[in-house]
Image 1 (tube, one colour):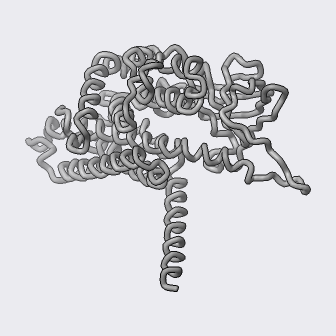
Image 2 (cartoon, rainbow, N blue to C red):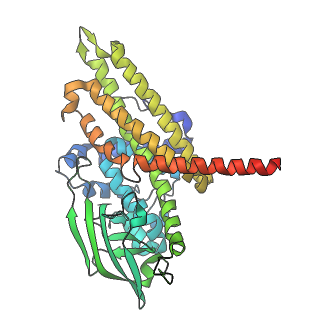
Image 3 (cartoon, rainbow, N blue to C red):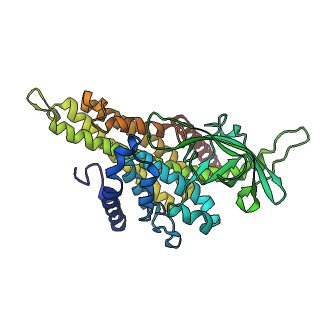
Length: 403
């Protein structure tokens, strides 16, 4: 399959394209031979990831001083796409460790936390979802209380990527975020989930029962207070909410890139199959019922890529502006990406429903992206909230100028 089928090189600079090509060549050696083995439980996913870490791909965004490549966010997004086109489970495992944990906790103590993650010696996880706090993070129950020269953390976290095997975790509480090492007394793995897709991914349900961490493990902390009537002072929790929001915006962008990668792989598989499968004495691509599907898929892929690229360019110039658009980008790419995978399976017909082709895996894997990092419904909520806020501000400005 041609490199550029479903890819638009004119949208990228020469350095970005050069990085992508080098990555693709490395993935042919270090990942492609093991994708099916990971899918069927024959190879441990982190044995493969450690080989990629040896080439710096666990530290794309980080400087060479800690073993990284010192690349841009656009190059990181290209890596998310290329990795996901081969194995979404691999990319999610890598990003949860290197970005999800490393972006905040790693920079606090690079030698202790970031360098071992980048080199693949240690595994990181970030923990915010709880049994009663999924989309509604305001219901988060995790607490941190000052205790001497440290903090005592009580929390129950679930659906945590890498959680069941992590060496370090970034644990969000109602009033802060803290690094918790897996060997701390009081930490246990309650279970590791078995998943519909993303085979090989380690997704854990974790318990933190009076886990003490030293003060240096606090990324930030705000003491919880109540008023005279015992009501919680939510304004003092605002810094936690703000930091969490800043973490979500880039995450939603790279989830969009992951959807783009999976959808592109499904499109390429369907395109090739449509030229080879013969029915009624001619290739099925000669039937408009099939070729029109491919036309729609190619159009959607182009639109997905344009949204991803534009959002990343905005991140590189104005993160706060891009944060407003990240929800749109994730929503569009995830919904369109799932439709592309589903239509690709339809093009393949019965054989697409078997494991003879990877399309059934693409359908199972991409389905999670409409849930993780914010559900499609929450993305629509965020979009409409900002939409009406902008409209209201514009109306007020218009009224003042007329006065």
